[in-house]
Length: 96
Image (cartoon, rainbow, N blue to C red; front, top):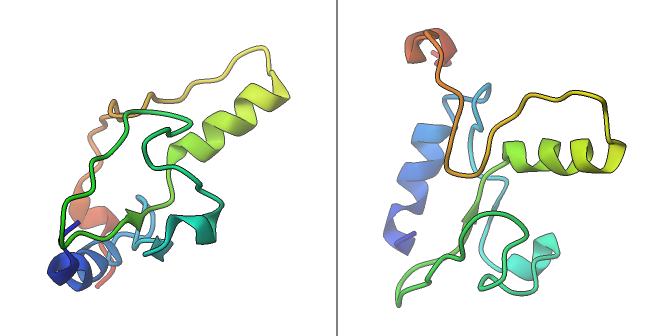
């Protein structure tokens, strides 16, 4: 994300804690245990351009990893880039 837009992203997404919310980390990926942005565990690699910083949000992929490890008989989830769509309104999820 362009470094000069990070504060905007935090402000906007932080108002929706029930649906990812604010980033959990901005900056050095190694602080989260991520050693190579070119080789993600899930989804596609992201190209970092000059002037951009990595920004990380909590994600359903964490739950997917738990499902894979626990091997339940049935689990409903999403795939990276393919989110669940419902009739819930964003205004119902917004903090005032």
